[in-house]
Image 1 (cartoon, rainbow, N blue to C red):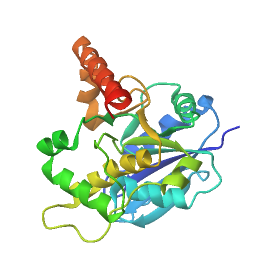
Image 2 (image 1 turned 90 degrees about the vertical axis):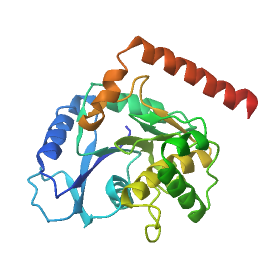
Image 3 (image 1 turned 30 degrees about the vertical axis):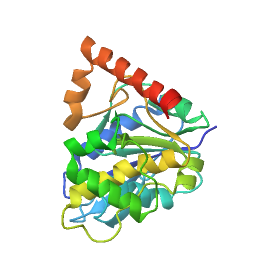
Length: 255
């Protein structure tokens, strides 16, 4: 039996209502299979939590956003075969999430699986839309000596799963290094860790994939509900099919 741990990041300057809601969702999913739950708190005000005793709780200084909390808890929770990382604002959206993630990660070359894979065909396309983020990503790649590759396509750091051996090989989640650059800010640096985590996984020969054809299939997030809603439209499916086909041809033929 695969030993699985669900790690939930939580920033305690916010109410614990959404955290409790997600924990309740997860507990109702016990029929999915056996898994344990851990919560990693980014501490701002030391808010007390009323959680079941079997839930592991880690507390750390508030730094690094979700990814910082995920890495902290992962490093202190050895002995599991599979890890699923969630932000506390997520909700369980569809049954079958554990099986889906485990099935994906059983494929040897699959590295990271998540709910929303944001695709860009090139760094130029990304830089046109997000110039500050692109500079922060490139800077972080240089700092940790990783080739940025041809594209910053990446999984959003809201829900992400991986095998333990993959996480150990790639070094887990990329963390910020040094002071924030004058042309950047904390949000840009956080986005850089998110993007470069996917880049580093690919640099080690692993793919980064979405858990289902549509984004936010198994876990939803209120901030991104419009992304999920947009995927109801036939035109969205047509555009994704074309983009996916072009990306496949680029990888197989032209590169």
